[in-house]
Image (cartoon, rainbow, N blue to C red; front, side):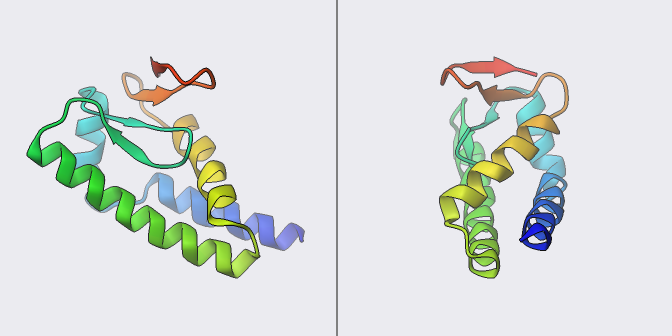
Length: 108
């Protein structure tokens, strides 16, 4: 059981550094165009075709990874995504928006 959670956290740690395209995600976050939600997915805060495409790409890859981890560890995708959200939000750079526990958007 402990090994399962260690595996989950190791993979989630990789998700923080996740995309090789993270430079774009990083820039979108720090400029306030993209925020991180409590459910483990990104949200377009200042929608444009480019931002929407980036968010869709990030979320598609996260969905796939969350599904893989959930199968490996016998957890639901929602549980894996919410665990990832904590890791992602805690690792955000200053100036990055995220959804607080109250549902409102905050800036790291």
